[in-house]
Amino acid sequence: MLTNFHFIAVLKFKSPEQGGRNTPAYTGYRPQIKFNFSEMQTSGSQNFIGKEKVNPGEEVLAEITVASPQILKKQLEVGMPFEFREGKIIIGTGQIKLINDKTREIEAGT
Image (tube, rainbow, N blue to C red; front, side, top):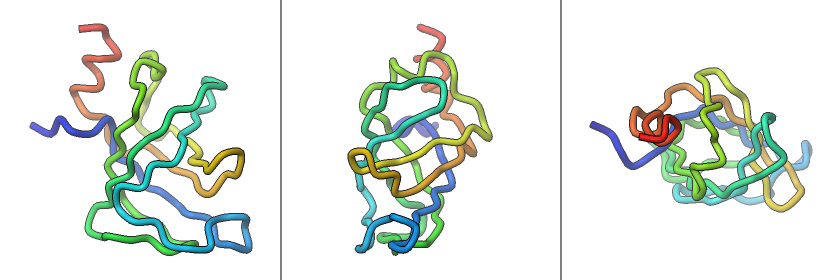
């Protein structure tokens, strides 16, 4: 059973022209993650699936592990969008594709 991530998502990195990064991101990259259901943010490690790096403007599938899973508050759903940021700058967006069963246990308080 997979247990090292909270969810899998498709990530879309903005190009520099769209206000994104000027340099590639490498697997293990840890931007802030922001969901619409809360003003709070958490950092989240992005481990890219099938790639070591993602260039600005590219899309990638990634395993996401958040630093503070308690802020998820039983609110994650497949299909849910989110932003990832460097400070106040939105450098990309994501959409949840799969939620780990262990994350569901954390959300349920078990």
